[in-house]
Length: 107
Image (cartoon, rainbow, N blue to C red):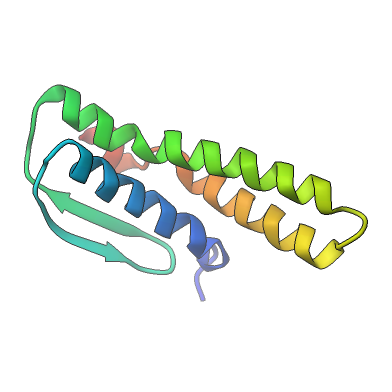
């Protein structure tokens, strides 16, 4: 198990945000790969506007989901500690992976 495998839900959201941005901007995707510690979406080149949208989509989607999950987790404590912990973990995982990767920045 690699160091960040426990953050796998964040990887899923990150890559699905890229894929969703490709779909919204009509950019053809060739492959989508999701692994426990990383992933990638391979798509056609497009306009600068579309490339920025695709590259920054995890920041927007992940940031919003993370804030929502942390808010829900806060509302669950102290009544449901396990449920609150799971939501906080999901919020952290998604928030951690919402930051642009090195490849996102290069694109």
